Amino acid sequence: MLCTLCTDLYCDGQMRIILIGCCHAQVIAEPGRYFAEACCTFACMVFGIRAQKLLDGEQGYDYWITDGLYGSMNSVMYDHATLTTRPLAAAWPENESSVASEQQAASQQLYKSTVFGPTCDGLDTVLTGYSLPKLRNGDWLVFPNMGAYTLSGASNFNGINSTDVKMFYLWSQRSV
Image (cartoon, rainbow, N blue to C red; front, side, top):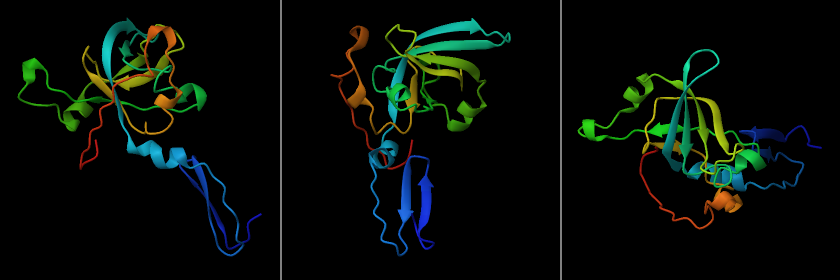
């Protein structure tokens, strides 16, 4: 029980913080995700696409990416995490002189999309009904907040080697 001088706060629903006033409360927490999650952004390449008509008659797309729920995105199954993504703007040969700006990307038409992992298992569904522009094979999707409990929970399911992967660390002075 906290006294009236202590304040009980919640940070992003992840970690409970008690600001100590006078009651000398002891705080026991596992703050790993809180501190490590936001420091990494994960990128996956799109390697498969299927156009489909949705039940409402709208155009939709299915995409397959190079990682999924049996790899670095296992937190969806184990921790009930909610992932978000956005396409990484890229220059294609027909418009090499200009890389799409964030404003151009925001003005693109969005489609209800489903994003699947690489394993061919129906459970390996990363996102469903997620709004994305039309993508191509070779495009990349970036997933923020992937700094905690990602690769550590991966498995080598269905012949996909998720536990012995090459890692590339990039450093930038501006946020992506």
